[in-house]
Structure formats: structure tokens, C-alpha cells
Length: 95
Image (tube, rainbow, N blue to C red; front, side):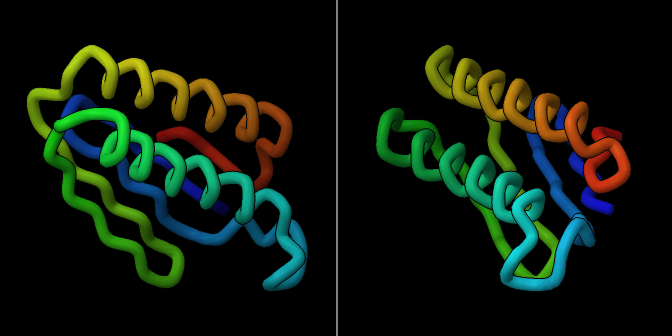
């Protein structure tokens, strides 16, 4: 199961969806795309400073004092994650 934790200064995503075999897991791909899009959007569309790391089964994003634009981007990420968690509750949870 993928566990997504969000607070005012950090987003962590851990685990594997286990919806399908590696390379064919649409749930994992969807979560990964949302996380990567959030990072690039903040980097390319704002001047906010963020740090992040990705490794097998872990994504960790840290930020402080986000601009209003970045806050909206994080909100949009949250909407997308909620949609995935609602559609695939056995594979994604928000904790």
C-alpha cells in the first residue's frame, strides 16, 4: 500500500501500490506522476525553495514558507491523491 502524509512543511509518500506487477502498475504510476509534477511545477513556476528525494518506494518533499502559488499547487496535488485514494482504497491511503 502507498501511504501519503502531508503537512505544512513536508509530503512523504511511502510503499508500493501492489495493484499490478512492476512496470504495469497504473496506481503507482499515477501517484508518481502527481508527485513529480508537483515538484517540477513548484521549481518552474515559482521562486520557492524545496528539497526532495526519491528512492525505491519513497518520495520525500520538504518546503517552508510557500508562496500562494505553491500552496495552490500542493492543494491540487492533494485533490489528485484523494481521487486516487478514493478510487483505489486498497492501494493508496492518506495518513
